[in-house]
Amino acid sequence: MWAFITLGLLGGLLGLGLAFAAEYLKVEQDSRIEGVHKRLPGYDCGACSYPGCSAFAEAIVEGEVTELKLCKPGKDTHYDAIIEYLNDHRNEDGSLIKVKK
Image (cartoon, rainbow, N blue to C red; front, side, top):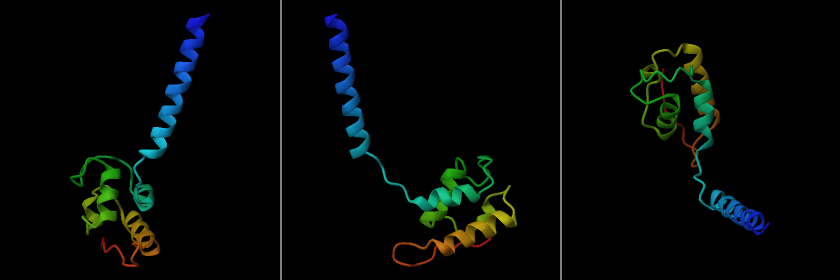
């Protein structure tokens, strides 16, 4: 019986420790990355020279990518949606992320 109580207490304490660690050690990510990622084709093909659509979206938001045509499977509808989204969601200082088709 003591083994069950000990394991239960140990599991509870470790669970609380993990919960606190998850809260205090989380990494904040720019919400616009997810918004751009949703508007990409989602093939994760790597044709843009990035390891997937998520990395390409992050590069767009950070200003590393200025031409959306690097995404080979993308179409004008994807590019227009991304440009419109970035125009509506500016940087914290109010500047635009400059990208072109």
